[in-house]
Image (cartoon, rainbow, N blue to C red):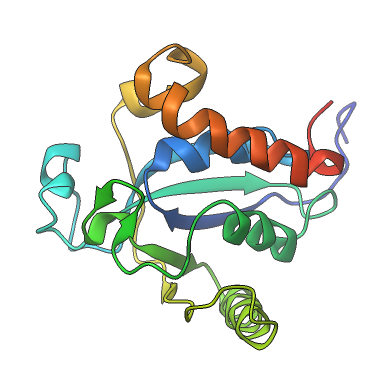
Length: 184
C-alpha cells in the first residue's frame, strides 16, 4: 500500500439536481470526495452542451462524484444531494427550466438503487417538503463529460454573476448545514 492509501476502493455516484455547476461546487467541498466531474447522462448517446440545453436529447446535467466510502457513505452523499436542490420541482431548478435540469439519481448498482429509493421514501414519510419528491431513480447507461470550460466552473469563475447570485447562496447554506463534513 502506498503512503496515505487507506486501502479502500473509491466509488462513484451520478446525480442531477439542476445546473451541474452548483452541485459540482458543493460536492468538491465534502470530505471523502476525491473528484467531481460535470457531464450528462440519461439520454441517447453522447451530446454536446448546446444539444443538451435544447432539451431534446433526454440527457440531464449531472455530476459524477468519486468518493471514498470509508470516509463518506453513499447515503451521506444522497443527504447532501437532497439538501442542495429542490427535488419537488419537475424539470426545473430556480430559473433553469427543462428536462436537462431534472432531479435524478443514476444508480451504478442495486445497492445504490435501494439506497436512493429508501432515501426518497424517508423524505416522503418525514414530510420534509409540502410537495411530493419527483426525483427519478434510473440505471446509469453512460456518462459523458462536459467540455473543459464547464469543469471546476465555480472555482474558476467566482466573480461571474451566476456564481454570485445562484451558487454562493447555495454554498453558504450547504456550508452551514454540513459544516462537520467539509474538507479541512
